[in-house]
Image 1 (cartoon, helix red, strand yellow):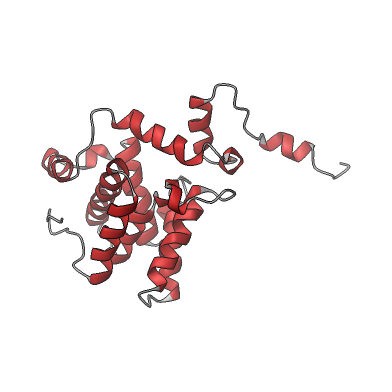
Image 2 (cartoon, rainbow, N blue to C red):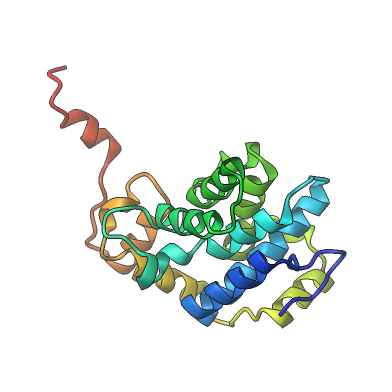
Length: 213
């Protein structure tokens, strides 16, 4: 299902259609609708900024950005962002996408929870993070009209309890590998759900290394 808003719609290509089907069949309604909204927020942000972006690559990056939270695509030892990036890479390789473009999508997904870096990179990378930050954190909310937010959330509903539901979804996707949250925002998710959780401390890692001084 696709709709158009200010000239933005889901790309009408075989790869995009099959990506939609793949994510629809793999993710929960919560994550599927979230990822779909992320695409529209990211594409609209690109329009606002006057960026030239490959919307097909942007769509793949947005739709796959949380697939690493699912049981089917979750590893035991890698950050969920890397799991998602690897899944997107495998998907894109089936369509003969150029390695440089695959790298853009991989990087966009891998860095989407690392603030302060993606915004300075290629539009396909920067706008995945922009879309995620808008939908999860409300960053840039003031840049969207009520008509835009209303239209997108009508097609891809945002539950009244979305804030708590997305935190729970993050937790369920990473709770079995807390060590992968070192140095990223998802450590806050585990700390929220497990008050006794003690994340790795960067300074302690330095002090406990095998160096003498």
